[in-house]
Amino acid sequence: MSEDTLQQSESAPVVIGWREKVDLLEWGLKRVRAKIDTGARTSAIDVADIEELEPGKIRFRVVYHHNPEKITRWIYADTVRKSTVKPSHGQTQERHVCETLVRMGRVEKRIEISLVSRKGMLCRMLLGRTALDGLLVDASQKYVLTDAKRRARAIKRTTEQPEGETNP
Image (cartoon, rainbow, N blue to C red; front, side):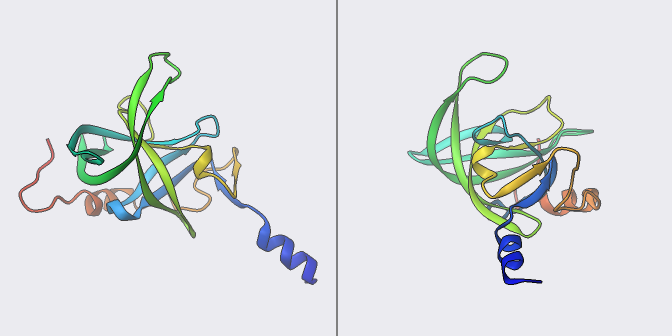
């Protein structure tokens, strides 16, 4: 392999599928199903019960799974900002935006995530354009960087609650 080919392959974007499993490392969440959405600027995750603890600090339940029952996990985080979003259904919403470290396969990056109810959606999380810098989406593929199997085991491990907390 020539030196030029080696440099080109090192700078080539990492290819991902239109759906991937992601780990939110600082929140202790593994294998969250994420849809890649190049039409959305900011990433979003399905949450419930957002509570402001003090200025700039919140807690919320990440909804890890809806069917057959709702499985959640409490997360404590700092808010980076609040944003006003006009989703496709047209009604303007104000959302908290947090920052965390996400991992997809061998790719790790710090991203902003808006907190929103995604109850009717198949994927618990959307990865928006700002999280996709340096990545190339292959719309004909899914789970390119991550294996879709082992889901049930990952859900059980990820949703275990600290002592004294239960799922509603």
